[in-house]
Length: 63
Image (tube, rainbow, N blue to C red):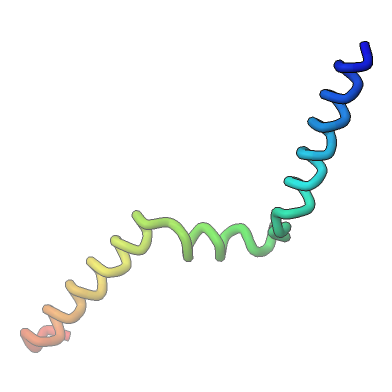
């Protein structure tokens, strides 16, 4: 029983130190859309394709 108590205490201390070590990220409902648009690689690739297409149209004199 004593060995179990020591093991539980060690596990608790390891968990508590790991929780304190991680910095918290505050996410609000208003910032979710901005975070998704900024961090989504598919959306970033689509934005680049749109910019490329607009650049080609501009160079061809159509825009």
